[in-house]
Length: 397
Image 1 (cartoon, helix red, strand yellow):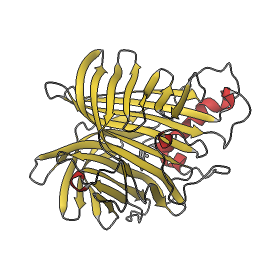
Image 2 (tube, helix red, strand yellow):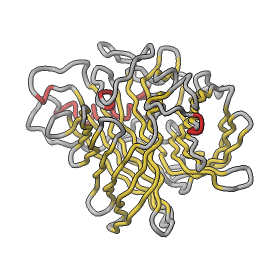
Image 3 (spheres, helix red, strand yellow):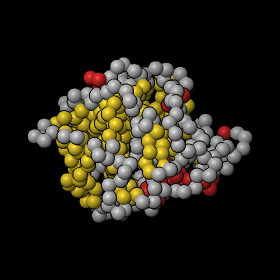
């Protein structure tokens, strides 16, 4: 999430720009291969700070969202993603995490000519599954050019996101009713049914999520998703059920040069409340004025299908309303120190956020941390689960 969520608010958003380097050379050649090798050595915050936005539309003022149309692409903006995370378990109570994302990156502001090869769009897909009991974190990715037979996203009465042989698709008229199918040989895969059970939540100012002066995105979430199906982990299939969270974000401008990265959290509490918070990390170490959060309390909702700032049950959190403090770090094999345990204070309420597996680093085209967490109370009692995303840490190339 632009500046997501990885989405997310801070979504590992313009991760997508990596596609440019893998595909740009072959972009205008129909006979080019449909995928590209991974690109390494690119810092995520450099991509998000990319200044060239000439010709693209910018997110500047609140807008009216129209569904199901806005579940689909917004090609006039440079970057966009469809970002699904889930906390799952099997019949014996073993826990699993799912992270699936399809990123869209516009290489140019408009199609370069007639025909499907000239769409000007490129796509990147990330799939990761965490198996807590076996301490396994498996991931895969896909690159593809925007083309009807390769990759793209559409949404009318039916939603469909395709990248190579991965698909997220289904009914979009009213609550989403989708299936997700994605795999990498027999090593890791998912075959899931996803049913929306809660409202669409407009983040920020009725969907305008500001990340800094002149930097904003359009951003909404669906934190109420019921999920069931099967995971494949190292060749073994397991039936799972659980809760999911979908983030949608699109933008042209992203992180300010004063920022090194972000820490983003989507939390689903057992009392049915949903919390999204993120902090933007400044190079000078000061608290950023654009740190932001949102809390949804279902007991106060009035049944609207789309909710946001000003609606009953929606509490907007500014920097003065919450704090995020790292409590423990995990150092990976490359020497990067990831904060994997946090204290979150919202007004007078305290939560401990703890990674269920320290090593949930995504080591694909760009390296970041994205993984399953548990939420504990001050006495150590579990209050829920969620997902955490960490980007821009020193040495994470």
